[in-house]
Length: 511
Image (cartoon, rainbow, N blue to C red; front, side):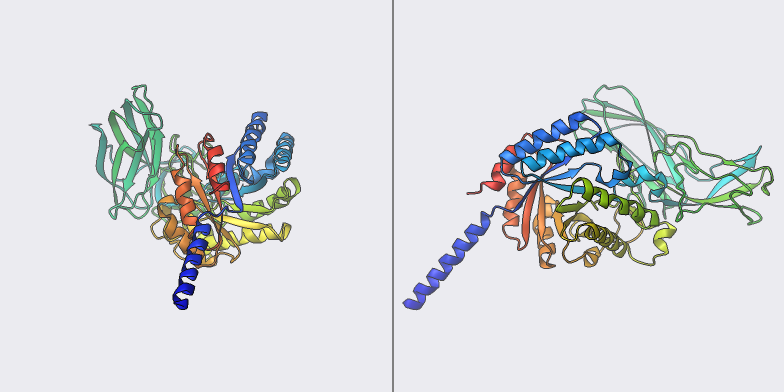
């Protein structure tokens, strides 16, 4: 009887402990805020957000505030940042700087646009005439044409490792706010080579849309144009056409050389001797402008009428505005090394979060290939280098990183976007005291378990612009079952803070 009694007491105690764990209030309760601090209204917005956060039990602000380009900021930026820090200190809201990404390479490109990740073009045809060499297509790609309702889809022959422009006219009727047009180019193995989205207007007027893609290894692609997210009553598509382009968005840096040679002679011509420096003066990482020409120099060896074959690398845009940077170029770390002392001087944070998410282009250029390492190893080393830089200026700093590129249940996998390589195993290269911010709600249990079993502490990026609290409730349930879970964050990319108060109550006043 006594044995049964002791066993029952132990079981009840275990249930009580489990119940208590289910209602844990996590020490890190954050809100995500993104403001450039280019205007005084940014300061006013942040004051309102952190006031609400503080009143409802939150204690941190993950702040995307231009910390990865502080050496380029004007004096008024630092005055606004001082006011933000003053407000946060008064309300006991910790500022957690974030940035230092290559997947979204805007900060690096603001320093040097040629740090963009490059896609390779091989043997593009140029013909010399009248002091310049101009691009001429020798691709089998032909205008597709035709009018379609709902969705257009055609198979088009292309040459591998060439750059192509797509043009189409669309008209949307009854499009809901946020409805998107999507364009894809599928290789024979179903890998998508074109990631393009554009918002559809509800005006029902015809609109011209332009994008492009690199054919990579494919000799044909299936072009597809149709509605993406959101709802459209009727989508009309007309004039779909494809054309090869040359030197559009050409990237010039150490790892992306341009090679110009004679088609018949094989002579490799020299920049600065035979032709002027090759650049795209309209480089915008889109495909909405003309092909740059190659300007021949007075004493060039290139003959008039000679056919040239040109190898180069070009940048591209993923979806609407994402341009990736190259993690392997030496200049990248030189830029980052300048930022952390400035962050320490003006913020002195206790915690950082490295925004190493969605690295969707990379692995092609010579800077990457010369390293003779997997994409997983290169990404892990990139994160480790940033970790080391932070610790050099702040030895006690806690450092987080977004989860997706280090999670086999998410983006750490083969055949990921326009990446020549494999991110599988990237988690093996992370510093052991790195902490992980997980954000894939549908696979939250798998993600949290993955990192917890490896000994990493975890934080949940919850909410994601929904209009209810089901997302954070689901995250809390999963966190409660995860050893090493330390926090949860209200995360919005659309500046929707109407549920910030209820969110704070939910995570800080659990019953």
